[in-house]
Image (cartoon, rainbow, N blue to C red; front, side, top):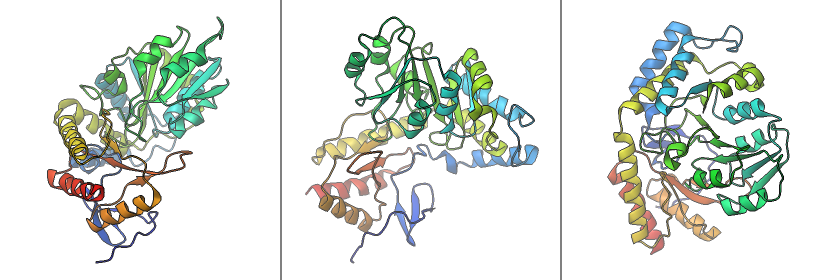
Length: 369
């Protein structure tokens, strides 16, 4: 049977927890970041339905006027407890979180330094800080230290970085950053992919790297590991006060719909009380990486469930896409930012079965042969 590779901008439809419809055919997918497949959990749907009946679909006003509801405070309290932080601020979406934080701190820093592979939300946020912005090489604390040298006593830097990088599955070296950061500096971590996933309790990169929160402010989204929606900033009451007073992204926006807040609250409670999903996703990822290495693939040992293949030549890319499609697997081929070449990036979930993982391994083994 001849398999053709067509455009991958066609709409995709869910066909179950680990499958999707693409061009009228069903494929296993190893893409997207619903790491625990909580978006399919009936408990989240039931919580959303309950909030819908009580509060309606939309509050139609900002929380600073008449749009505040008890469900938002309940969600913030649950997040504060889950992450063991002093304060949590919920926003309408994860992209907005770094923007709101930057607006709150505009004018506080003399220089901003941003990882070259940081998410676009952090690059947009950096422009709001009101100071010069400079990129630094990916996860390179030594290069960052050189950029810090000779800045003088008035130097007040802020580092912007992802926590878990979706492009390659690597984690920001927060301990190394804090060692070179002057006491006047801070680190803003967009931990969209890390929260709920990394660390012994799912508290994200801050827990994974075992760093204090006094100079680290953690942002995130509830749309990935938590399977719901909404943004969050995890910090202190003082930072919360600055956000409410200075962030137009917070003050001028309608909050996330109450049904989604209800679903997010249910997800936080589920992940707080059940470690098995993190254990399963780690087991799946470790098994998958081990199998690829046995078949000649050079795969780095990153802590998250993102497995990126080395860059391939164009003819090899097309061949691998065809092999994946023929095996009933949707090809997750992505190109990030200003990169000149795309890569295959497989995202392993806690719900993937061993049979599905074996099918993917078989294709990648065949490609190597």
